[in-house]
Length: 554
Image 1 (cartoon, one colour):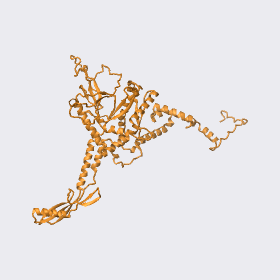
Image 2 (tube, rainbow, N blue to C red; image 1 turned 45 degrees about the vertical axis):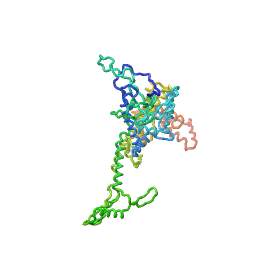
Image 3 (spheres, helix red, strand yellow; image 1 turned 180 degrees about the vertical axis):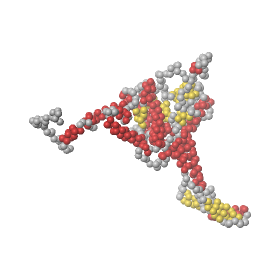
Image 4 (cartoon, rainbow, N blue to C red; image 1 turned 120 degrees about the vertical axis):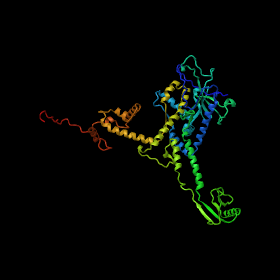
């Protein structure tokens, strides 16, 4: 029916047999827990979830085509992924990793190889945007099964609508959960089933059928091992349905409302904008049929039907057609006021678009984008950080969380690459992964203003505390508590300062703390700049010494 494809990396550290829990693992990856046997098991339930996710992904991609929604998405992606001609959008940070320099060098080399496989320096914007819109991203790790030590050979992108993560009970001789000892009352002595995790890949991106797989017949997908797929989700979950959501999910209603209010505004303006006239035609005592004929003749005689042909640029008179925007012609019997023409005014307050702006702001708030970015006419203030809006600070923190979540993709691929090349062991990775960080290129000017003002305040405090160094504070205290330097930064700065003093780049602080008079004397001997210093006068030893006054003579 389907075949197993891919590879598995077994962890030598297994859970002890005595550690038992009836609670299934956390399903943050958007997969349900199925206690059934067989390949697809209870396919109806899987199909229901799959159908929901299929529809959701289609909805998210349609939303991204909305101009206002696309503008908000571009603001988020541009903030998270910064493209620079000289630097890569992301680099690996290993300063907190407790490992040898050789291991760190290998990790940096493998991470650069991963970026090359993803072509991340070129396609970073596209990859991040796809992940943000779909709420998930998948890559197939292609390796040489005969030579796995060569690592990942290729990373192939998989459409989110073609793959599904499944948890399922492994098929065993015992199909049902039962007690190991019927006479016991301890619920922890149940024989819990072993859960299998895998991906199901469907080459055809079609809507799932209503019929279960076993009934429909034929192959519905390819079963692929979990380790062979690199995937990263948004982290948002619908706890009621167990599906993974995108960050666009909150904006579905806002996008639909904005679209409807814009359409209604266009219809209202087309129907109410022009001024129309009402012609009251006096038909006297004519019978009904003749009165209608007379009215029609008058209407055709005086009615103008000018039509503009956009293709040819010609204007012609076309009286055969009548539109809903034309004038009204009404008959009036004898005894009335005779023939009369009245003008109906057009719609009022057509320039009022407060409701449009409201729903635009609602859409941007749903996507956590500051509303001041709508239109982009607010300008940019490079003043003090106190003048920065709080929305921009919240937006910066939101982008930071997105980056943190997206980094799980690099972690997944890097783990596989390091294990295949025998750089580390699975046990080492469990310890090292917590200290591996990813440094994204950052160009948020608000953060730069904040950092510069903090540094200026710290330097001011250091200058104020300088007279008290040696009396109440030590230099180490100032560096740690006021300048907030870490141990690594202190060692690094001390090494650099020593090297710069030896090279003569900066003067030695010890020489600058000499007696001012001595320094002044030395400088006075030099004379003017550019001239050789004059030789000091040799003291004449023949001169008599001045006797000091004896005690009691003062």
